[in-house]
Image (tube, rainbow, N blue to C red; front, side, top):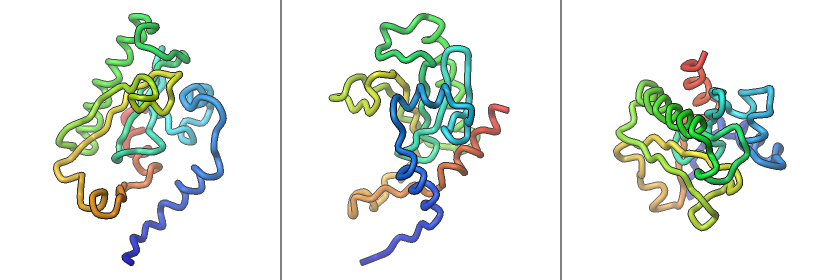
Amino acid sequence: MDVLWAPWRMKYIRYVMIKKEEGCIFCNAVNSKNDREKFVLYRGETAFIMLNLYPYNNGHILIAPKRHINSLGKLDEKELMELMTLVKKMIIVLKEEYNPDGFNIGINIGRIAGAGVEDHIHIHIIPRWNGDTSFMPIISDTKVIPEAIYETYDRLKKYFK
C-alpha cells in the first residue's frame, strides 16, 4: 500500500471532527464574530463570501445572501445584484491569486440537484486547472487538495482588507 503523507491536514480534520455545527452553516457564519474561524472572506450589505470547508479544489468559494432564504425567486433585486457582483469580484481575485484555466460556477437547488444545504441558497465558484483531474480520483477514489484551508483563507482574505 502506498501512503500519502499530509500532516498539515490534521488541523483541518480536528476542526471538522470536533466542531460539528448545529443549524445553518451560512447563518452561523453571518452571525459569527470570528471570520477566520468560519472562513468568511467578505461581508457585503446583503450577501457574503466564504470558503467551502469541503472544497473540490483550493479556492472553492461559496457566496450566499445574508438572509436565510431557499430560492432565487424569493431574493430581491438588491440581493441578486450583490450576489452576481461578488461572483464577478471572486473570479477576478481567483484569477489574480491562483491563475486557474477556468471555473465551474453554479447553484444547486434541491437535494436531488446536489444541494448540501437546501434551505439557504448559495453559489459555488470552483477554480479549475488543466490536468486537475489527475489519476488519484480515477485510480484510488482520492481527491488531493494541495493547500491547507487556512493558507487559502490567508491568500484570499488580503483582497478584502
